[in-house]
Image (tube, rainbow, N blue to C red):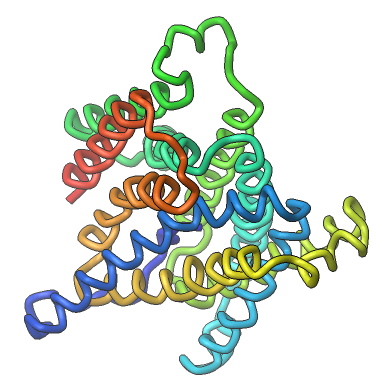
Length: 317
């Protein structure tokens, strides 16, 4: 998962001590590393465990840590002040942004290498921006459009293995189609957050949506895969548990903590710029850990996709 569009109250970056700002920049870089490394970890789980059960365990562990974090940060007070509209937004976000996203994430990684998957989802900001411009009236400019074009070209290059013309004949694998479902789920999640969750504390949002998604994943895992499959992680190897723990704690809880801290000190624009590095670290970690090959489509498509994301973030600021 990536950061929500809601954010804590920001402070003037100039008021923060220089040493603190450098530390925040390092934490945001670490956030990008953790989110990038979630792709090879997801690939390990997808090839080792039933997908619904693996996702339920991931968000079950993450929800436990998030509840402890929320309690440490002040308890359930932010939840008591929520309106019915905001609770509706939280439920919708949990269904779309956690349940659906996690399902497509695990199923897609069962078919597609982690390095390729990390680049396909760079279309997230492109589709989100287009729909937000049409639905929410957000303004575009030529720099954002240029970044969108680069990011889309990069993702198409990766999806088509370097030959985008093959997409015209419908030659797209099941894994890529599942990852597009992942993209659409995240776009829906982002737009719901912008429309219904304005002013909601981001930690409370993350905790509640993760818990709702976890419960749906748990019920689905028991009904579809059965109790035996759900308990299969208890017999999994140390490597699988390391990947599961990393996804639950590092990529979800720690990365979100660092992102929220970055937004509070540097502002949302500066913090979100680091998200451009996520696919880079996704490819690098998949190559180093899983020995996935770097073909020309991944290199060229990755450069286009990341370059497009950088241009889009710079244009927004």
